[in-house]
Length: 279
Ligand code: C2E
Ligand code: MG
Ligand code: MG
Ligand code: MG
Image (tube, rainbow, N blue to C red):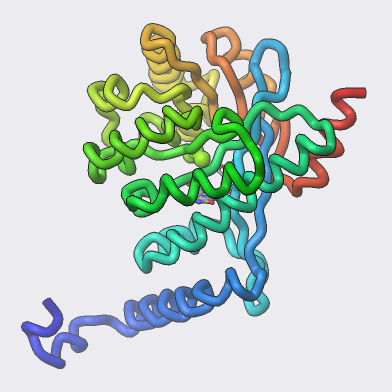
C-alpha cells in the first residue's frame, strides 16, 4: 500500500506515529535477543477450588527483564512477539521451562495438579506445535494431564479446522484445554460445542465489578450455567476481593484466580506456599 503511493506516503505519517513505529521496531530487535540473553523469566499464579480452597493448578505468566527499561509486561511485548513471529521460539521456551518447573516441584514432593500455559494462535496453528509439546512433556517426564493450554476465542477462530485438528491430537495426549478471557472475543456457542474445552475462564472484566453490577452478575451467572450444562468447569480470573469470592461461590463458579488468593510469583515462592499448605 505504501509503495503504491511512492515515497511521499511518509508525509501522511505524523511525527508521533513515526516515533511509535521506531519504538516498536527497537523493542522487537531487543526482544529478538532477550531469549539468548536470558532476560525472560516465568511467574506462576495459583488457581484454587472455590469451595475447598484446594490448589488446583497455576498459570504460567511470562516476564521480560530488559537491561535498559527494567521489567516489561506481556501486554507490551506479546503483541510484538505475535506480529513478528517471535512468539514461536518464545512460546516454545515457555512451554519447556514450565514443564521442567512442574517436574521439579513434583520431584520435591509438591503436589500441584497442573500448570496452565498461554498459547497464541500462531503457535497453535503451526504443525510443529504438537512436537514442541510432546518434547516438553518427554523431557520433563510429565504426563499430558499435568498440562493445560489456555487459548482465547479468537485463537480458536483464526483457523478453526486446523485448531480443531491440533487440539484433538493434544487431547489424545491427555493435555487439557481452557478458553481464556471468555466473553470478550467473538464468543460463539458453536465453537464452545466444537472445541469442548475442559474449563472456561471468565474474564476479569466481568468479575471486577461484582457483586454490585447486575449486568455483570447476569453474564457471569449465564456463563456458569452454560458451562455446567455442557459439562465444563469454570474459573474466574482477577478475583481481588472477599465480596467477589463469596458471590462467585454463590453463583456456582468452580475455581478462582486472582490477587486475593495469590499474585503471580516466583517458583520458589509458590513452592514455599505449597509446602506450608501440606504441613
Ligand atoms: P491472561 O492469560 O488473561 O492472564 C491473566 C492476567 O491477569 C495476567 O496478566 C495476570 O497477572 C493478571 N491478573 C491475575 N490476577 C489478577 C487480579 O486479581 N487483578 C488484576 N488486575 N490482574 C490480575 P499478565 O501477567 O500481565 O499477562 C497478560 C496477558 O499476556 C495474559 O493474559 C496472556 O494473554 C499474555 N501472556 C502472558 N504470558 C504469556 C505467554 O507465555 N505466552 C502467551 N502467548 N501469552 C502470554
Ligand atoms: Mg491466560
Ligand atoms: Mg485470561
Ligand atoms: Mg483476561
